[in-house]
Amino acid sequence: MGQHIETQCCIVGGGPAGMVLALLLARMGVDVVVLEKHGDFLRDFRGDTIHPSTLEIMYELGILDEFLKRPHQEVREASAQIGQDTIPVLDCSHLPTRCKFIALMPQWHFLDFISEQAEKYPGFHLKMQAEVTDLIQDNNQVQGVNAKTPEGPLEVRAKLIVGADGRRSVVRERAGLEVIQIGAPMDVLWMRINRNPTDPKQSLGRIDRGKMMIMINREEYWQCAFIIAKGAADEIRQKGIEAFQNSILEIAPFLGERVKELRDWNDVSLLTVAVDRLKHWAKPGLLCIGDAAHAMSPIGGVGINLAIQDAVATANLLGAILLQRTPTQEELQMVQRRRTFPTEVTQRFQVFVQNNVIRRVLASDKPMRAPWFMKLFGRLPFLRRIPARMLGVGVRPEHVQTPAKDFPE
Image (tube, rainbow, N blue to C red; front, side, top):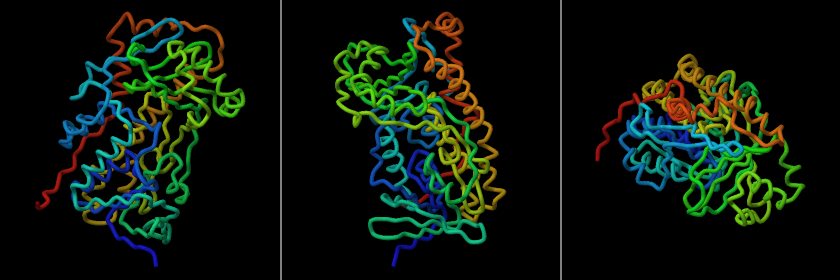
């Protein structure tokens, strides 16, 4: 006999969208179960830029000060190196938020923190190593999920199932939701390389001779994202790890002998980039949010923050309803109507950058110079506020509108 759970909301996926939604709902008094297929949150090379819009949500929840006690780096300004030109492109000092910086924190630390906050509420239940395999449906109404756990099969039935299980969502696949493929011309090779105190400061990117690499300052090491053409990973691997080391040195020569820390391809992780979105985010009894509803490009590192915005909107629109009854299909669709505009605007911006910057860079092997309009960022400081606003706050940011229930001590 398997386990059986009855709850008000079952969230599939313990990523940023799922965990923040669980915290918000449990804070209201909703009984919520989160099913996470892994045994912990410790997975490297995940989105870990906590933008000012997300920090604002932490403030609205009254947990910002505690959050900022966790190890993190703060990015207030950033630049891009194009060929020999270093261009300042980001200035967060004028953002209309409490925190005028982007916090860099490994995603597992962020998720551990959100989990600790959610555990303060009696309605929060997190089950690790619970891999959802199918939906329970009756007459096109989703009523629950089936999962496998180390203890055996698990059945969870709920008023609402939320698919927050990422771009390879089992939930959206089993629900048969139509995916609109937008596409991306690149993939990303992730790696870490030790950092010296004398290394250059934080930069948004290094671009030259058909190569592009993002380097995130982790104090003790660089987290590096080497951009490659879509599907080129096998060809690069066939050339050998030394050839790849040399490619890195061509764009970041200051790394020197440290590139040999990449001993073999086990030290390099491939992220297959996808940009897509669901035509319909919901069906009766089911709602998808975050990457399960709209996979984002890594451009700007905005995916985690857009997912969290989805979670806040979902709690604002559906939290009070879940305390009383099952949301109707029309009520579930309110989330998509609320979040479609910021999703589409962000994806259009990412596609523009993909097609007009990244695709052209990867197709050229000539020395590069910063285009004239990029040089204006160096001459006109107010222009740096534009990408800061777009990345740091985004389009139509959400705010916590749900009340906190008073629980007895």
